[in-house]
Image (cartoon, rainbow, N blue to C red; front, side, top):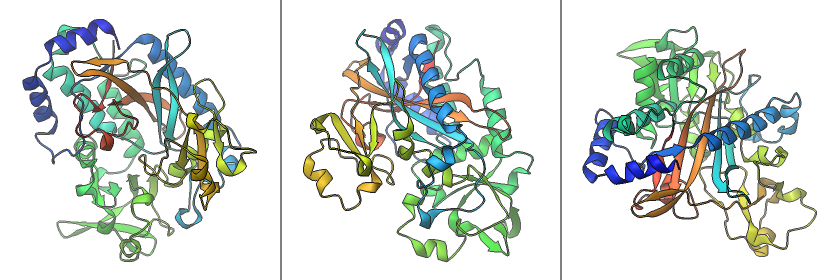
Length: 396
């Protein structure tokens, strides 16, 4: 979006450099299933400052003393995990890049999560774009906010994820970790922080303590870097009954506690009232259905990664819902095509990634960007489209 850098990149792009970029990024890791864009995004200072301001407005609401009361119904009863802490350790806010009436770029909130994202992967992604495409010849770039550098970033992640524990007592846990689409981030995290990567089935319980086996040795698990999304395991009860069920009390620390995945989610959006958030309503609390439904999207509260979203809403879509209490109606935002490529203009969605230490303040660290030409921004919807896909924002 910074025109001089955009022009430089497009003029110097070659398929060979893109291939080298992919090899540099993934060579030592399992295959990557997601489509990566051919380009990073160059975020101008004015938009950067707007993103920072937008994030701060959302955090004000999350830090309200009554936030847990407001979101008391956000956690499904069947997936409530005991021993919830006072705040999440991670925040992720997704903003569409739009234009206001004055023609300036502005962010509009699409979704938010109290859950970790691709923290290690995004750092490596930024490094590989800069090296493979020799961006140092065009300028000096960073994916980090507020003057943070890579060493400070990983020091903060280590403080929050490992804490005072021995790294082997800490594990990144997912349902079937080696085969997840984001597994490359798991291995990069393990390489940087020294923790273990475990599937749910690798963990067993003795009394209230958790353990896993490594080379025949039983190791106590004291802290879980949680990457498990219950939406992915709700239909596999046998997995939980045969091993560790996270809903049972255990002597383990959660980073971050699973309940925050639900509290800070689409469920939070109706409570956010500022210029960066589109009008959003709990469907069952609407006094009347808007007549201009074409200007809204219908989203299920308890489904994730874009599943179940109705973009072209009709009255019958709403009337036929058996569970309106589990849906929100959100005003559409108009993504502005802002990234020029040899194959045409692309729309952008920028995810701000925060790390929140115990006893500290939420810190905006790095970002993730998705590019698309279609209505849906997720990488699963742009797998075959050139220049679309997942990427990172670089700032001057």
